[in-house]
Image (cartoon, rainbow, N blue to C red; front, side, top):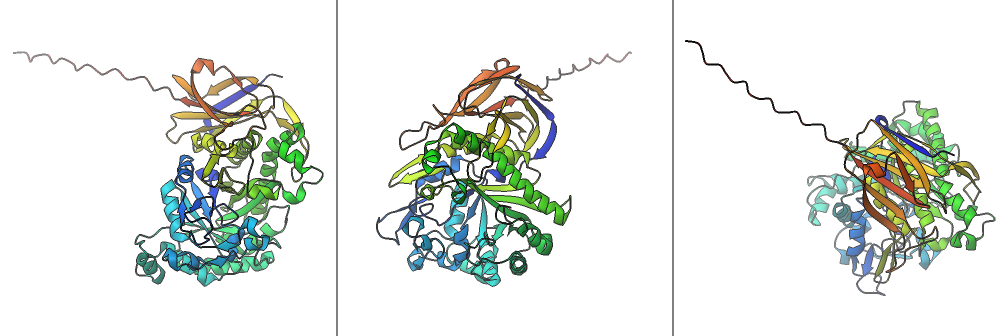
Amino acid sequence: MKNAIKVKADRVVGEIDPRIYGHFVENMARCIYDGLLRNERPGKPSGPWKLREEVVGWFRDLKPPVVRWPGGLYADGYNWRDGIGPLEARPMRRNRYWSRYGPATRVMDPNAFGSDEFMRLSRQIGAEPYVNVNLGTGSANEAARWVEYMNGGAETVEGRRRSEYGHELTYGVRTWGIGNEMYGFWALGHMPAEEYARRYLEFVDAMEEVDSDLELVAVGADHYFSNTWNREVLSTAGDRVGLLSIHCYLPGMERIGGVALTRLLKGGPGLYSAIVAAPLEFERRLGEAVQDIKAVMGERAEVRIAFDEWNLWWTPWQVQVPRWTLRDALFACGVFHALHRMSNWVSMANVAQLVNVLGLILTMGDRAVRTAMYYPFVLYSLAGPTRVQSTCECGSFDSPGAGGIPPISSVPYLDVSATLSGDGKALTVFVINRHPGEPVDCSLAIDGFSPAGTVEEHVLDGPSTTALNWFADEKVGITVSRRETGQVTPRCAFPAHSATALVFKKKAPPRKAAKKKATEKPAEE
């Protein structure tokens, strides 16, 4: 079959919200404590706890657009007042949600990482903060007071408290989630959709009385858990919803079926195909949420989706030691392509999570490593905000099912997405080659953009689909090279099991010749 990629850079098909490359940290297992933070006195739960500068530096390198905190399921058992004020005066609490599963998921909460520490981190890495309030066991008044602590001036009670604690300037947190996964029996405060919608409106009223300029996120549900929740919530509260939260993990621990854990951990041709095809299932499920929004709010609905928890998850041990391989990195690249295609509806996405818990970064003691899943975020930091038309003709394969990933037929080996920079001077063409063993030679045609000079070629790859990064041994990473434009167009080869970003720079328009000043004739006598 002829392999051909065509990009029409002058045909805009959507604007990409940079928040789709977002992140998430929760007080669960070793994400924050023993992950993002190091205990200066090991064995003493109260610490002191200090940020790992190496991890913060790696986080900053990702140019993170947004970070969600404090949860997650933890949020619906969290009292924000426990995490403010002098560190030595903060209470040691039982982790109200995750303690139920024992030491592996975190029993005690030292409250050393609270609102001010989260905001300091957000500013250090240049990310927008996204805060989840406690609807499950908290109150609307409690949530409103938290908004006041974050956004209120010194003339307010909580703003004055924040100032007394050494933070005079307001934080200006715009995005707030109200509750988390309330549709699930596992959630603190689990309730029916109609009751959640009523409580959501109570919280909105209280929070907006403090600050009317908030972007509010309501709990939505993947259809796997409920195909009526979204419509019931939107029918009652839709006019007050900014974003509808959707969560999805694949293949899913409770849905692995006949797929043995040993196969999931070691991989195999069939499993490789299922994992790299899984973003198409994410796209289908997000499409169901879009249909819910349209059905209730109409075709021109202003409600958008926050895909604020997504990842792969097939064994509980991944919350402690995520062993991501190149295969899983290609999955993440595919998720970004799916989100590009859904850019008119998805305004934010947050991978779960940053450190250790299914994390992009793994720590053990004083050691830390960037996993294979870290590098897709590096690669797609090259993406521009404008998505332009791209088409691809190539071969395809049929993917078998694996747990929550259904069998998918005719999955294209190549997945293409093209974006323009804000000033229109750079065109980045992203190409994923899902083939596990063969490079794909392909024609590449670009219309509506005149590239000039050299092309930057960024290739995310590794020695095999099962290659993983371990301490002091990173086998999966990105290589950067420069090639002449004529070496990339009209034909280009994409390595097996890889993701490539080709960055073209626009040819500068020819300079206009300076007009010669006309010589004046002397006036006749």
